[in-house]
Image (cartoon, rainbow, N blue to C red; front, side):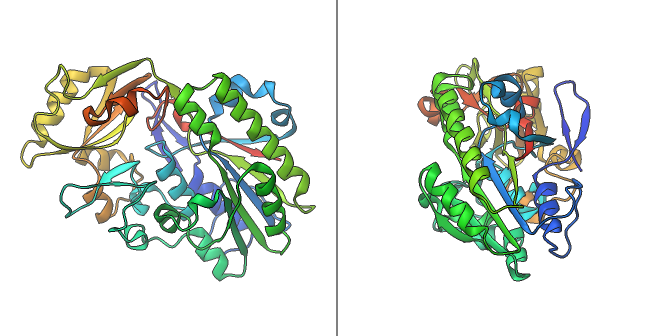
Length: 373
């Protein structure tokens, strides 16, 4: 199980997305998988809907406004691994291993032995080979090799992207735009047995970032989500299990600190990675201990500040951390608490204009639903 630190400071054991895909593929008889979630036997058709940004807290607060959430079984609450962000969570889901092993450690991290260059995991960089960057065989590859018809249904723009190749390779990709086209594609892909379909919708996350959780735009997006789940449930072949989960929740931020503005935090910093709730900070050689102490003194309880060594020892990225992961992670990790965001001074407009944020370790960001339709 995955350990994470909740607001109270205690370490809580939770199942996460790696357990989910292992359990589903175990039900489909894929070798070397474990049904940790005890989902039981399958009729050999499984569908997994991933709703980007749909935290358990959001369902608790707003789910009763949408009929579908009373029609599905609340199977379990899962925990997103750190950082609670799309690139990391989908890689954990896709590979069935924790971030320290798959090496997708955040929204942006430094490319080792580069000219101090960041890799944006969702936008990618043609100079980086996705299969060399994320070397772990995906669950999709493994299942396909054992005769499961594995299909990935999502927006056409994601097909062939660097991130898709890194984290989710091995599935037949069916590009579909709009919930009707997507639901039809899901049903078609589930005709063979055994079959598995992964389908992804990002409209709720986009609305949360721009306008905030609970806003009119966000509620409209949640209505679309409810319609999509309903359509999929209606059109899949009889006996298909339809699972619904997410990659993270989201907090609406009311407080921000611009790194290096009216503070001396960037004195020894060479590069800022990560995102506003979970920063990878890269530091001049020899100044690491001084900088960690400086940041800890400045932030006190407003952000959790850890050295690279402390991060590894704490198991924040999982108990096993590969050499690649050690090279990529920041010399300092800064995890904003409550609803604080830590702004990159070169991205003030982009980052401060967003209402909703994620990446941190609060329950609102970490706890995600596992529903069964």
